[in-house]
Image 1: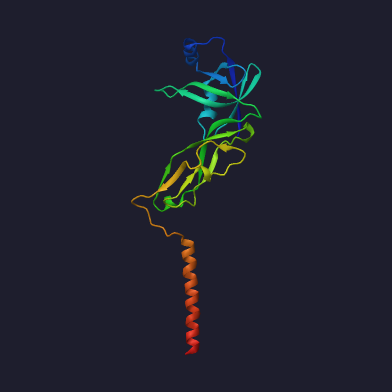
Image 2: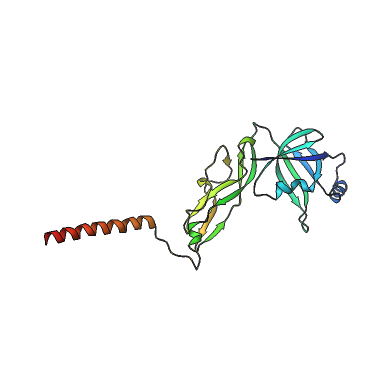
Length: 214
């Protein structure tokens, strides 16, 4: 997981009136949880361009008056009309402490079932992952290339490396559904092809033997 650094300013005054003034000046009120005490600060809204509008999760190094805090984003509040960032909660991490965050899923390839007219239905776009900060993935790659119509991928099918997925093992992540335009597939086209080749070869031998006897 990549680390992105942002600069912030400690808040000397709290309350909704001060928070509104901070937003009017183009900044976002924030708080860091998980340490000995909660740390309130603000940072320019542009600081979140690489953090919130990206397909990956990141570690965030928050620099406040020369003091650096290793964190992850825990929650974001947006304005209901303008969609502007209103408030961000961070959680302080440490190298040996396990934390739980949501990590985006990255689908790799084009499913065989989709190519044959099926429809991809995604139930989970992010997975809840538990690990120490050094083992947290920025995203989780899932190869869907070989999936046929009717097949699914569940949490238990995902290969992990140093982290744990905190969902039920049988929770369905995605499935390939049928549709009106779907093409019916054989159970195993490769095996069928091999079977046809074998039958042709055996038939050719029998014909040769019959000719020899005649």
